[in-house]
Image (cartoon, rainbow, N blue to C red; front, side, top):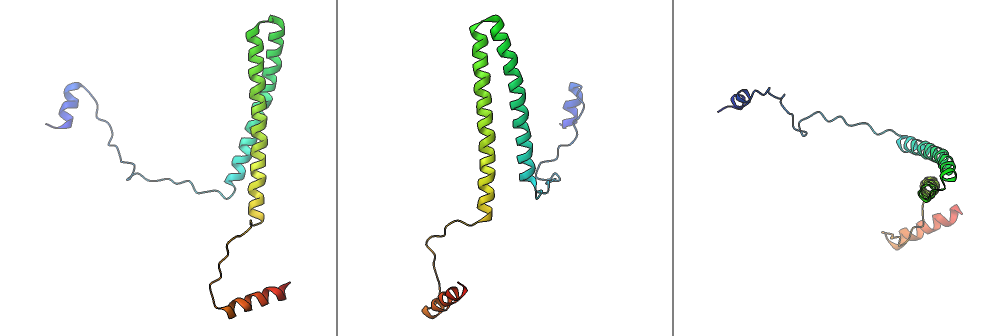
Length: 134
């Protein structure tokens, strides 16, 4: 019995042939040289937008809480305030991480446990060259 016969008997239209992922054309997005910087700027703008909108929402909610004097309204104000503080902390952490990442690229860290492979004469020659450079 063919697949088409079952579909016809049930009144179904055949689906287009499915191509397995391994055989499909892989469209790999080329890595942009400045993708990390673009991502940072995009995330930074989003943080600013969220903080700004959250501040407006906080101001509006404070007015509602004052007008209603309802405990739930004050609880919402407290939650919005905590969310804004967390967003500000995340923004600062993101900036700090960027600065740290740039600092690591600029200067190498301390190198420990160096190993020189060569003869004693080779080592003396390297040390003499280093002393002459200073």
